[in-house]
Length: 265
Image (cartoon, rainbow, N blue to C red; front, top):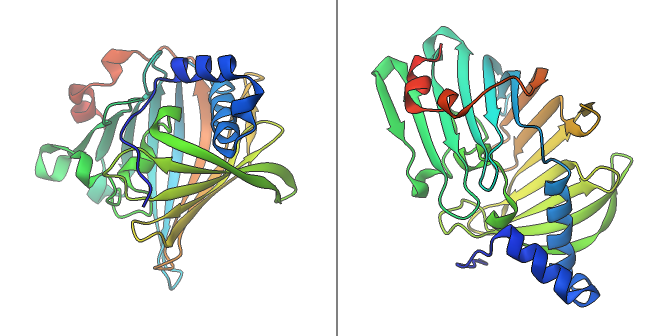
């Protein structure tokens, strides 16, 4: 298992790369980090967003269950993003919500609202590898994937679904992460994340996330229309279908509080 305890702020990392020139870039670690920084830069400036989602859960036999949800997100300058996810159907989980404050260096803050129990539960850092409401997504998968949360290594170039891609390995800094490493495919044209392979604490392939049906918004921001997380160890999968993206809608910090989490319906 590969872990590093120290995290260097992104601004300092960028200065280090600039000062070291091509020497750093020529290493696999340097090139992997540069790719991650470029992908992050290309997604700066969306301010806030709203989107509706359908979640489809499938077991190994192919049986399905469907859930409707909405997601609100707020870009935070100098730190990780904030997000609020609320389930609208089915009735037994209506109003269930997840509030996430992602951070670049510190542990993320997450709260789960459980209306049936009239309770807001804080998700402890050591529990963030657990499944989110029975899906194949872990709580840590739902935080914004900040550059500082990983160390990196460029592996190779590869063709994936007709797109030329960089293949980069990244290693979570968080000692409580459920993953030892992740292998990421980013297309060279737009630095979109097309696929991620997740390896568990035993270094075995656990699951794969595939993102497709991308559309460009505001002539800059690429978003997938469909994401599928497949668990190789259980045969289960969770599919997310994204609809009706909106950007710069006027959301503010006041829309991302524990009170707003409890009030959301």
